[in-house]
Every structure is written in structure tokens, then in C-alpha cells.
Image (cartoon, rainbow, N blue to C red):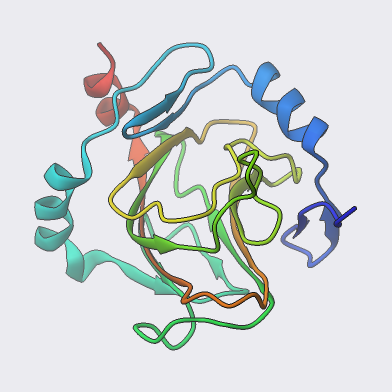
Length: 201
């Protein structure tokens, strides 16, 4: 049996997240998880802005984005973040864990939107589980709050709750050394309460 996903908190302490922990957190979380085209609801729903519509917004505000690297903390001064694989646009082939901590910028923030301009990881197993490459978002208490994704997710977007008591979220991408051209270019934006309200039906 392969190891469970490994994450670490802001102090660099690593934790292993088991599948049952992921399911438990998703069931108990009093928020929402939505993926454009594939919606996962928990509690009240929020409509995700389609990737095609959000591109113009990102192009307009691209100069405001902060380019974060693996193993860094995006401080609360940054509400818009770009996260790319090392040596992008060249693919990544090595076994690694790329983790970036996103600190909640202020009390008005209620959600985090992640647009997958590019996200191409090794495919899932025949039963749909991501055993080799994995994308996930974890709380500062190291609990998974998103489905674990792999394969090609380019063009989709993900909106997740970012509310108290959580002060930060960890974006984690785990890669294996199996033969595949892995590449990612994520646009991450913290959404204030008024924007979230306008997205709710």
C-alpha cells in the first residue's frame, strides 16, 4: 500500500493525510467546494466563474499578482497569487512535494478561487484514485478541504471557503517520478465577502 499524502504546516512539520480524514473533513465542513464543470457541494453553494470569463479579469489585473514559489509563504499582503511548477514553462519530471502557504489577507476574505490555467499531472488509477500525483488544499490544521485531483484539470477552477478560524491554507502538489510531462500554472485569488455574496444564487 502506498503512503498517504504528506503535508506540512507553516512551521515545516509534516503530517500524513489519510483518505478517511479527507472524507470526514468534507462531510463536516460548513462551507462549499466547487469545481467548474464538476461541482462538489457542501452546505451552501457558490457559482464558480467559468475559466473563460475569468481570463479577461486576470489579464486586466495581472500586474497585481504575486509570483509564489514552492516552499514559500504568500503573506497577507498578497490577495492575488501565481503558482507555477519549477522551471515553467518546462515540465517537471521529478518526485517532489510543492507546497505554498496562502495567508488570509484580512477579515473580509471569505473564499479562495484557484483557476487552473494549466494543471496536468499523472493520471488517476482505473478506479479514479490519485495514487501517484496529487493536487489538494489543506487548512492550517492540516485537514484536506478539497477533493484530491490529478490528471489534466486545465481550464477548470476551484472555489473553497476561506473563513475564520482558518488564517491560512496550504496549496499542495505532489509529483511522482513516473513518465509524464507535469506542468502547472495556477492563478489564486482571495475573495472578499461582497464578491462571494454576489456569486451566490
